[in-house]
Length: 606
Image (cartoon, rainbow, N blue to C red):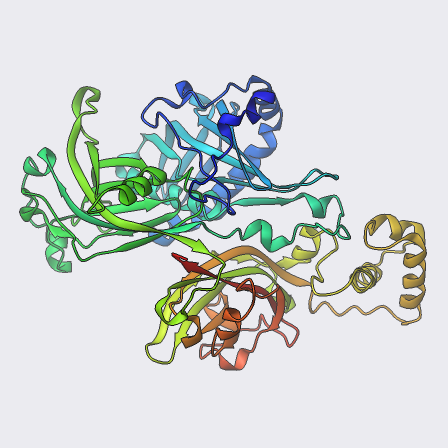
């Protein structure tokens, strides 16, 4: 354990900030097999713990397969479903670990592999057809961030678990897979999308240990949005200047398919750039013109970097599929380079240019030689919370922390909701838009997750009074000692006794269920805003199951953020107005429906 905190893993002074203002540790030997990388250490002791926990972890992942991936499959092909979803008896393997300190956080990076072998039982069913998945293999680097280490219990205030980069996934089909009207590669794409929406940066799984330990009154209590909405470090702007090489020269011409002719899509190639869960696609170039190389000189793609030291830039070259109803493009070549290396090359060369060798995916005999190369150009813009000298000549990124929604109607229980945000501009009308993933509403969802501490804008006594009143309305009969134990950290036994007497004088318990249906989001939306003084913001809660709007909150200008010292406001509750949505309404909202939001600005290049 002591070796983990060796100075070799601490960020050198003066390097580019990678997370919360910390430093960066250059990654080495990216092309070596992960189990031989010198920066990883063996972790046999943790593998035993993972083996013991695997039955519970496996059950959670199996539910995610059915709850997240199955709807994606059915949206593309109605009737396609999982026949079975058992992930096997063998837990993932931990090939090693390394650490990095950044400010008051400690990052643990685990080299993870999952190869369950023949013990898995996963199958897809489409009518009478059954296709079993076999030879499943998953590999990636799982990051566990210990957020805010403090000299008190529980020592670590929160934990974030995520993949900095998309894990690699491979599998085969057995049975009648060839008869399925959807190709295996498309199922793999859906699986990666499901993982990206949950666990690939900027998304993560969060555990708020301060809340679990009931440390609500501690002066350094970790705010909920500080855990699930960590600010990014930089914006990486990339342009694919060209892709050329032997692979394109040998690319055989392909005649147009009947479906492609009907849809007006001739055979084409395009490049796909990925950083974490973000991906950007270039415009297609006709395949017949690709022999001497392809260029996209006018396309600039922005990527928000959360961790410069851990994230990679992936470049992939595809041939567009024009022959199938369910489009599945063919991967021709791919490459990977660390974001830190890209940033270093762009800043250290004139003109800023990065050459990346790409390997063809269909080379015979395991040939890993370069088959083509991509030339990238662009820039890296650090993000800062300091005001610029002139807002008119600056660019900013709006970070919108969407914490939760409370006060929904009983009819909304079990439905899925999403929050959509859009920049408003007097000159250009509607601007950039972003949306959270869909989350299911439930009774007391926020209450249970926050351990009876949901009134973020109220004091401890007000919060305790509301929680005791809620328990009373649910039929609980608590003594002062019981209440003091349940609300430990909020009130003492004497205070609990006084609150119980006050609540008792209110008379008959209120059995009004309105306000008990809640949605816990814990998401952060990121929108480019230019000069915030010339732009407004519109936030809408959408009932995804009904395709309708619950309500809207709107600001005509973001100038107030530019005047705050830290370019941010505090987490606040806003009442959603159903009358200004402009969309068909729903029965999910009430007059008490509130959304908890926090807004902040980050300035590029300051």
